[in-house]
Amino acid sequence: MDDGKGLDMPVQIEALISKRAANLPANPFAEADARAAAAIAAGRDIIDLSKGNPDGQPPAFVQDALAAAAHDPSEFRYPPFDGLPQYLDAIAGWYEREHGVSVNPATELLATSGSSVGIATVIQALIDPGDTVVAVDPYYPQYEGSTAVAGGQFATIPASEAHGFLPDLDAVDPALWTRAKLLIVNYPNNPTGAAATPELYAAAVRLAKQYGFVILNDFAYAGLEFSGEQSLSILQTPGALDVAVELGSLSKMYMVAGWRGGFVAGNADVLAAVKAVHRQTAVLASSVIQQAGAVALNSD
Image (tube, rainbow, N blue to C red; front, side, top):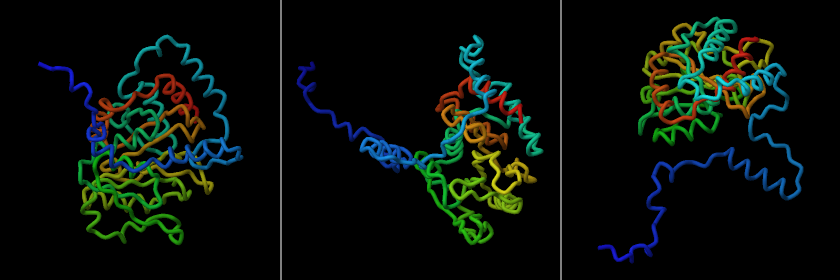
């Protein structure tokens, strides 16, 4: 019989924390937030460049669409797991108009609460402990953090200024491609501003087919043009839908980073796995954000 004495024994919470959580790298954006808050509290006037926060306003018609959706009783309910049909159709229409790419809304698209959710979910859908994720350096820090959550190994390949901040994929040691399960590229690039070329994406697709890995293009800066030419979707590359998926975001295109609207597009088999993980782990994309996103994407 319990005499109650055990109630006085301290619980060693530290011993109960998972190794996964205990060994994660710090989030640099959270650390930057703390530094900025401390500087502001100390009376300093700062310019915070730690995040890609827009400094403008979203178009008025997009704000109006969000407000209208917030008053629509049909949006008071939970949205479909994979996305509102009208939002997925709008994404498919945007791909067709802007990039000449046909994607099936039912099998090749997923609505997400921002592209960051897409990064984490794609990595979790593909990476088992010990698997290798390759990213181009410099890289968005979440690629490494989400790989750590999945227990994967993280490797980088260089992109020097002398090479226009684009990697020479054919110069990479074949042993790394043999180990790779996922290659992450990010164009238009954060932080360098480099834009992908057709040749870069063609090389990536060729290598993915040769060595058997998946490509993830973080296309969060789609629609922001740096040289007067439209930024390329990797899905425009012949054969890309055999091996690639792509992340999209409303944050930069429409200056609504706080709304958290995004999507994953691409290979149907990868999307099926991504959807399975997303249904178990992620918050569904807000219905009102999807409605406003559909209006925005249909306006292009």
